[in-house]
Length: 82
Image (cartoon, rainbow, N blue to C red; front, side, top):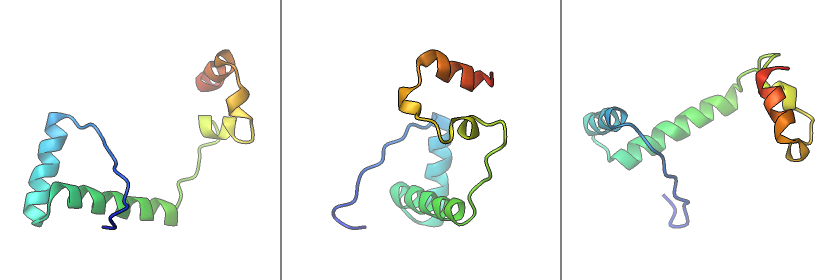
């Protein structure tokens, strides 16, 4: 890992953290290495085959709109599918 790498923090439930610790131990790597490799592998898979946004999804409704200028009420209406 390069010395200039950014840090990524995340919160996990106690149960999930234990699962990750056990999996890392079985794989013979540190928790950090295990999480890093899993995250990069998943990112590569999504980038290679991006999921299609559902027609009614919020992402589709917001696409092409200046979302930074939407009022809270407008955003809430879009979120509810109105």
